[in-house]
Length: 424
Image (tube, rainbow, N blue to C red; front, side, top):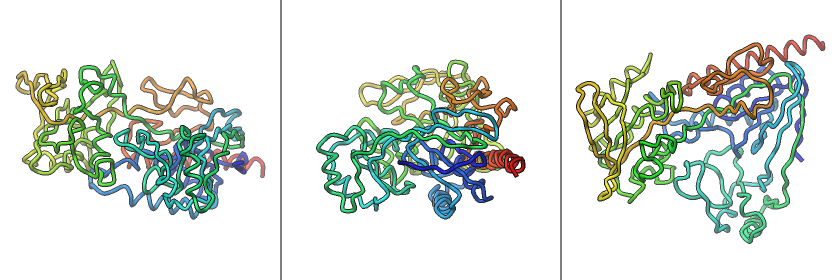
């Protein structure tokens, strides 16, 4: 049974991505008791799925390692993974949270040796790699997963594979009798940091994501470029595995569109500029854009990419994509709005820079909350002691999300400090 010791001076953080981790650590390092609830089997969120950051093109693994070390060293922080907050009752300074915890079927004895994965035969789509490639029914979500503990897919429970995993474990870490739990605990303030999700490219019908194999999303391309990803870093066409010779990036795929997402997702331009540096210099790269939003320190990076001889910019909102049935190449149709020339440009691969959609679901939100027309949580007094952090509040890049999360932590600390002062 999972035990969480908490009082109305405890801060509850919902979501363990970069924003949730930042808010939780900042609060815990001031001496506050913090419970972080994360629905995935590990913390780190979508940052763990990035190959590189922009604009410095450095690797997220460094920052992840630092945050994980801070988390391990801090006794004030209690991390509960594979868990979701299903209800919050009360008011600022006096909330009661209800949390549902799904079984991992692997206990704290796990040494991450991988023997269980070797014994299991069943395979499933690998959600960490956005379903590119497969993972075993017993798996470590990714190489830096925290906690560093394997997971059994619930689909194999009751099968021969589950027993094989248990028999293969030398440290008695497999517990096939684990059950779903529901726990309740007190909290004085809540930080909501459930992050974002890539906009569903299937909804952008003219771009053919659901029917053209060589049209992929920016998040899929990011995993493909990572040497630790499903293709070992080889940039290849999904249809036939051939290395790409030309790639097109389509900006605002689902963003700034009344039929999809109203807002500018803010990260997409920079993400595509970053990804334009991934292929070799001999690969032709075309970036189709409405306008490039590279503000502040990003302008220099934009100019650097723009100067690359193999990169061209086409000012156009692509109208449609049609597949060349003979070679599988996507053909982009539209009008260049600088010269007003119609084009039908063929590429080996098309990458859709999909928008950033908030993961906030107002219909199932456990307390009354003010949410704007774009789906983000508004900073409003009606929210009481519930504060949004990072991409729950707006479309933000990693740097701005971390800054915002620090602010959310300070607001939550003020609430529990008032509780302490009243009770003292």
